[in-house]
Length: 144
Length: 119
Image 1 (tube, rainbow over the protein chains, first blue to last red):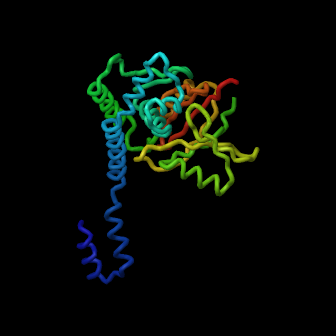
Image 2: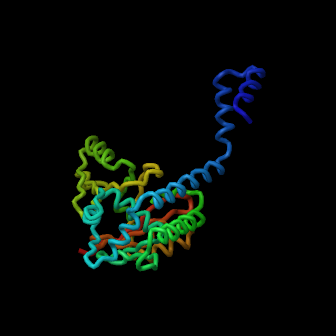
Image 3: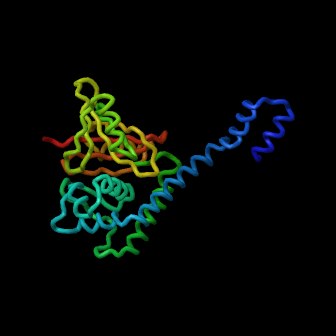
């Protein structure tokens, strides 16, 4: 129901300004399930946007395949000319999406299964994992 | 084996600002001199637990996670999933040899299980 209609009816019923404000706000906040779903959609849209817009994810996978790779986020940041926080955010995202694994302290393993993966192939796999994760984790908090 | 909370972790969209605030307020020492560039927090007290700051992605709220000590990360991940938890980050060995996983409890709160590296 539009808030101006709520306000108009409430005034006719003789309600005060504070009470009217409450009823207008309650109408907007009434659907907790829809809100949770919107938050979920917002999160997964942001994850997908990061995958699409930030080349760092594929760059980390490519680095991980090099013989001289070091499982050291500061080294990776230097190689990619980014700051270490950007590496850690991307690394966390790659782990969440099961695109990389670290099964020992010196090795990160590319889980895409495609040795010379192109940008387009990576996008296809990564976005499919975003969609799978969205279904699997549901409308809850999942920042990390 | 008991499973104590070994560490708190603050996830922050602005980790440097978070570090500055808490170190100024409580005189906590922040040290990022490790292979992950992880901002380790030393409170300077033997009481309580120490902590750390991890960068959160831009769409996430700032929040705190608990790291619970376990002797077998994979076993506890399996146990947690049996109780209705979901994996967010699968068992992962960090550069200094610690192993951790991040889970979502059935009520929607994330937490980590953590095995410290044998030194």
